[in-house]
Length: 449
Image (cartoon, rainbow, N blue to C red):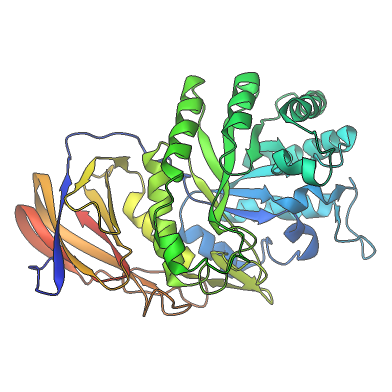
């Protein structure tokens, strides 16, 4: 419950301006990203019979499922049903129908990537038609190519540039629209910080797309020895300008933008960094930062035990919530249906952050994130309006380097995938300010009424 500061907690004042509501956080802000290869290599994962995974995704509320990644440009469309002899590098009608059933089960639309690397326009058009007809209203958009700006290192000549890509993309669009006149598209799904390609693509194709998207990874590659917990807990100085530029570019054409693939350390994630509790604090702060920069949402990349940073580990057909998943829960409970409101921190040099939103039911949510490894803080929350009731849900773990023991709102995810937050930290206050202690390496989501 709200408490008075103690001698062990450094004092910080958070001023929340409840009179200045801003950007409404989209209902489908949260998302997951999976490789196309998971459809062909492990058909039991994104499967309507995978009840635990379905429940875990439902816990997050509405969202968007992205299918793509490197394997989307390595797997060829067959246009036929899967048989015992069909290889894992072939995408079949059976795989798409299974994805369609899964999307129905979780209630999420799908952002689906076509193979641009093989430059097989007719196959892509046939694939687009089948994906569209199978997913129906659950198809959010198609896109052509995953990180095509690095094609020059593998599947295209070294001088391959935006003009070459744009010509290929246009051919794909034209043939897809012949096959499916109403086919929705997004793009360009490029590597982090490649604003020149994003800006050019948006200028050229704004009338043909419904979403601008690009990728983001906090650091990498995973093989870099110097990358550790503090690397991801330290604010990336390039993130704010990247998001601001994406927002400015999108706003020119009244289009939304989304970080369609993202996570902590590129190259599959780094053990001891991407799979520990520190990654949950990074992910929670990252989601809020995107939301405050008017992003439509994020898609955390994940999959099986070869992908260290995955929010949900799927191994031996079992789905398990990892620390980053708990960050997604914390974001959901701290932002669902909310409109962002300004927050000011009195001591901005500490490695802490604060975010807030006004909720549709008239309440307010404040998220406090303490990324300091050894310093705890007494946050004095200064409101514009008198609050009558305060409730706190904490995001915690035994330590920043913990792979297990993460909880949110005093609860862990059950073996069947269900989650129920406890409501044991609450108090009536009837005042405009109160204090919340946030221990080192933890976060708190506060609901104010």
